[in-house]
Amino acid sequence: MTYAVRTEGLGKRFGETEALAGLNLNVEAGTVLGLLGHNGAGKTTAVRILTTLALPSEGRAFVAGHDVVREPAQARASLSLAGQQASLDERLTGRENLRLLGRLQKLSKGSAFARADELLTRFGIEHAGDRQVGTYSGGMRRRLDLAACLVVHRPVVFLDEPTTGLDPASRAEMWGAIEGLVADGAALVLTTQYLEEADRLADDIVVLSQGRTVAAGTPAELKARVGDRRVHVALPDTDAFAGAAQLLERLEPELDVRARRLTLPAPDGPRDLRAALDALEIAGIAVEEVSLSQPTLDDAFFALAGERGDDSRRARTSQGAIAQEAILPGEAA
Amino acid sequence: MNVVLELRLLAGRSLRHIPRIPEKAFGAVLLPLVFVLLFAYVFGSAIHIPGGDYHSYLVSGIFAQSMIGTLPGIAVGVASDIRSGLMDRLRTLPIARGSVIAGRTIAEMVELIAGTAVVALCGLIVGWRPHGTVLETIGAFGLLWLMAFAVTWAGVFLGLLVRDPDGADGIAMTIIFPLMFLSGIFVPVAGLPTPLREIAEINPLTSLATAVRQLFGSATGPLPDVFTLQHPVITSLGWAIAFLVVFVPLAVRRYQRMNS
Image 1 (cartoon, each protein chain N blue to C red):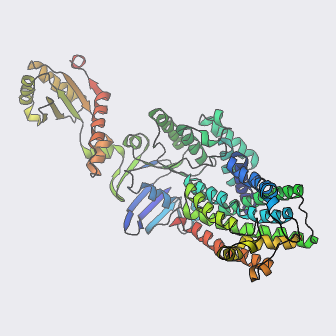
Image 2 (image 1 turned 60 degrees about the vertical axis):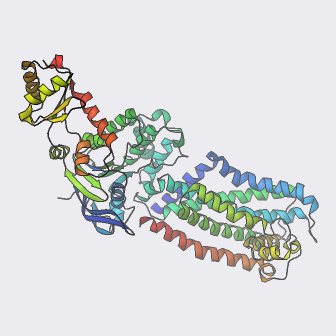
Image 3 (image 1 turned 120 degrees about the horizontal axis):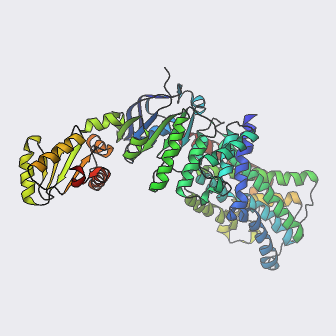
């Protein structure tokens, strides 16, 4: 079969620097590939090669079956790109931008105008359609940028960091818009620094670090590689902590003495949580707080891509996980 | 056929900027007007051109000046398109690759021709008239526009090279200010101190202004006995062609190399 996007050993050097090396991708129509990595991981380089904006130093790349180096015109006719910044004419209005892109892509004047109106409505920016893009908020620009990718239907859509720099509410709106795009049947290649975003939107994820692929798979597979769910038990005093540690010793808990906190593996999730609580209850050990956490893509990222141990980010993640699934002892018992 | 439409659309989008970017409208319309009025009535009373009137002398100079005055505008425009990512988006569309910069140069030419009309209008008000034959008059405008076209390509190249709108503006200004003032646009070069005069004699703007004066039948003032000013039409043509030969390939190559 013809993949929507396919690369074989794709690489790019800038002088001594290897920006991308040995990238192999297979993206099927109607699916979303998430390219995940920090700044400088090679995500944008990969997108620039695939969208014919840059030439690879090695390997081959195909968009809708067309070699991006040998048949760039055919490849361009099959793709659309929303770049890292909202790549639009700031002095034109939103409506003028969409009309221009429609007419450049060979829509008649009438259909280009109708399409522009339709997209402005679909992305909730019709009220700003006649304002210059320079006056738009970040969220509005990104939505217009996405709309600009859809003026003419292309089988492959590239979104380079579509939500970087957006506030949480705008990000959630963008996610909705991107999901709508996939429902239209396009294959989507999305780059992101946000693990949550790749988890939410992507069918497959490729984790890049310093130009190299460090992991690839579905979000579930990547999470599985990182490990199981875990139960966290916090105890009110040192006696309770010592008692609990002894009671649950056979489960090989991780102990945090200072925080009086135990972490247990919980392959069965809520069932393990309940078992731990029951055991503590029967032994008469009071519990201050209990939670069950999923391994997040953050965990996956740090386990797989390793370098750059960003403790603050890790701390935020585990807090988030607890907030999500915190269960009070009273409720559990 | 498609290419014609693409060029029209892309030139049209650049032209739409003019009323929306005050600096640009200022550069195209107000600047020549200000120069004509300032020099004609403020400095002009103190400047005497042997064998003619200063107003006619000045207007030809302003024509020449307005042909390079848009260098910053085009360089900034191209750099802004790169900076904003718009250039990238256009380059991923299935359109002729050259349309993007060609559309920009066409828009710039339309603007320059409109600018010439503004200068001509100001000139007519202060007493300038073309006294040459119809052919000479057409030749004068043709020469001006050819130089403008060449300068436009230099601007495209500068924008592609610098990629930063502020940087492009600064560099373009640094280039055009000495060119404007060390020239025979406003005053005859014969009266300048020797080292400055030697620079002004080879300045393409001096040749262009002198050529246009000859073709419009205005006074040229005393001309030093150097080839560039004794044969200003040929010299100006030579400069314009030289700029085109240098900057068109440079700009095109730079544009293609954006891939690497």
